[in-house]
Each structure stands twice: as structure tokens, then as C-alpha cells.
Length: 487
Ligand SMILES: [Fe+2]
Image (cartoon, rainbow, N blue to C red; front, side):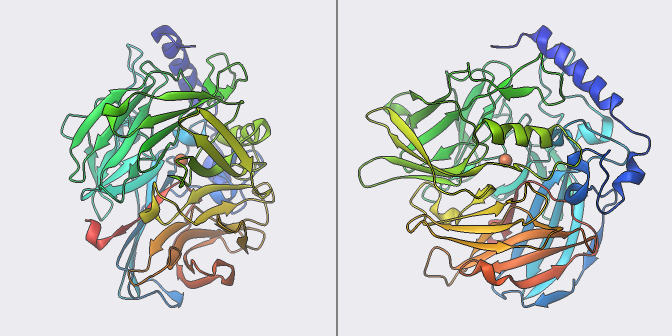
């Protein structure tokens, strides 16, 4: 199961050949069309059509009214290769962050900037001649977060890249030399301690390393976690007392004839691991579960009986295959996850060593989020993107009430798609959902993009403010609200 360095070198040369072979001379022209083309990979067409210029604009026009208490930045990352380059798979495209500065009811500026990594600037390859991964050769395109006063662009197989509040790249960030592994794009910041908990998941052994940075940003704990082989652990969950690992059925397969070298494997022993956050209280208890995949988790918490509840979209084999088609660029495919990935709720008994999952809706959803002040403790509301029409039509934003099971839905017209919603709390709010959802919205009908601000208590009413952007913003991946107080 564990690849050798020879295997990795073979994979690396295969990926490089794939990228060259699929670079199309006519690609740039094709990609300019608003609707893409059947011959252009899914992740470079339609809503994902990249942009090739860095733009700056001030005092943007707004329909509606921006809540005057919002004072900060909304940054969102995504994979956006340079003109003429087909990276072969969605995740290999270079990171570009789209940022908006909001203050005093105004949209002060918009900027889009590539993260200037050696991979972008010099074509530095991910794998070294020795078959190891170069942690600085990052696409830096998966997420962007702020912690302890630093803003970090993240890609899960590399070090973070630090950027400025104006989106200029400062360079790879290794916590003062303390971080020697890759860093997930889904760290969790504990609202109680201010710590940032994260991990590195590598195709090479050791496959999983756990890290904790304290509230001031110092890396205070690193520990290899034994158990997983070369599976994709993209996200994890935390509660007040536990870290929860999901070791899924998507595993590295170097024999695959596809750019992204992972696939579903029923023979892989899928497990869920429960690990005390207090590392003096023992190791991971691994619980065998049926084959599954999960890309993202909304939240986790412990109930009154000590059971662990985890909310997040659940992938069966069909949903995995559909998402994999998108990642590998199958032409005219809609959007990830595209089909069959629905709201799941895991119930884990850490003492009995049991875990079950219930599927609680039939709507295809992904990119879940919550009010992050509830990270690790009970959260009543989960927000997500909805993709009922295989990513081609009827996209929207959904809000689940975990307590009642009800859902509210904002359905968008065909040709319009919203990205991951980002919850920003109202400082004067008294309920968990008192705040706003921010999301970039692309409209293929007008070839225009906007930043929408939704009232999180009534998302179905549509935006309370729509900030009109001067350029196209491709659909992307993850982002953050960075309050002025955070930097
Ligand atoms: Fe992610």
C-alpha cells in the first residue's frame, strides 16, 4: 500500500508528461468563451473559466446595503493556471486569491492575485529528483486563513505561503522552522483556546502527522499518527476533548491512467479514529466502518451522553466517481461533487468503539460551513452549497437546522452558481445564525461576477447586498472572512 520512492518518481514523471500532453495550443481562446467548450476540461470551463490578469479596483458599485458593522476582508482561494496551461487535474492549478475589502458600508477594493510560489514563477516540480516532495513547490490554491496575525494560503501537500493583507506573497511559512511536514488546507481554530489544530497527510510515509500551534502562532506539538496508509485525508474534525480522524476509502493507486492518482478501494480498511486532545490521555482508538468517502466536515461536538456527533457531506461510491471525474477534468462535467453527495451525520461512541452514519437529506451538497465560534461544540446550523442539477442547473445555498431537520434553500437561476458560503457573525448578535453569509456568485448569462451578502437568518430572501465586480471571478475552493481585529 505504501509507495516506494521509485513509484513516486514514476508517478511524478507521469504527471509531468500528462501536463505537457494535455496542453492545448487553442486552449486560451477556448477558455475565453463564457460557457466553455466540451473540449476544455471541466475545471477550466463554465463557472471555472480562469482569468489571466491581476486586477485592482476601488469603490465598487453595490446593489442593496452592506451591513455597516462589517469591517474586514473576504479572501477566497482557487485553482487558476496561467494562460495556455492545462495542469491536468483541478488541484494542480496555481492558486489565485480573490479579495474584497469591506468597511463602513462600502466595498473599498477588490484585488485578485496569484500566490507567487516557486511552482508558479519557476515551474518548480512537486517531486524532487530523490522522489521526495518539495514542500515549497506549492500550487497554494486550496484555501486561505488567518491565525495569530498571519494570513496563510494553503495547499495540502506543501507548506503554507504567507501573504499580506493586500494579497502580496511573502513566501513559504514553516512556523520558524518548526513545521517539517505539509499542512492541510483545513486547520481548525479552537474558539476556547485559540489554538490551531492541523495535520499533514502525505502519500509518503509517515502518512499522517498531527500538529498544534498555540494562540500566538507557535508550533507547540507535532506527532506522527500511526494507522492510515496512502489514503486522502483532506479534512478532520475536533470537539472539546477529541480529534476525529476519518481514514476513507480513497487511496493512492499508481496504476491509474488518470491525472489524479487516487481512487475508491473497497479493500482498504476504512476507519474512524478518536484521539484525546489531551495527548497524555492515550492514543487513537480506530473504529472499523464500511467503505466511505468524506471530503469536508461542517463540525463535530460531544452530546450530553459523551457521544460524538459529526456533520458533513457523505460520499458513496457513485458520488466519489462523479467528483473524481470533475477533478480529472472530464469535459462538460458540472461542478464538484456534482452528484449524490448528501448531508451525513456520524454518531461515534468513543467508549464503546462504535460509529454509524445517517444520511439526512437527498440534496447534493458540499462546501459545508458553520458559525466558526461553535467549532468543536454544538452548532445548530450548517450552511453549504447545493448542486441538485449535477452542477449544471438549480445551484444554490442551503441552510440546515440540525435540531429540527428543516432546511432553507436559496435556488439560483440556471447559469448562476455560488461558491462556498462564509459565515460572518454579527457582533451584536444573540443567536448562532445572527450574521451574514458571504459568497462569490458567477453568472454565465452575463459573464459577470458579484460578491453576495446574505442575511443568514433568511438566506432564501436573496442578497441584502450584491457587490458588482469589475472582472470575472472563477468558481473556486475555500475562503475566509478576515476581520480587521484578526490582523
Ligand atoms: Fe477542502
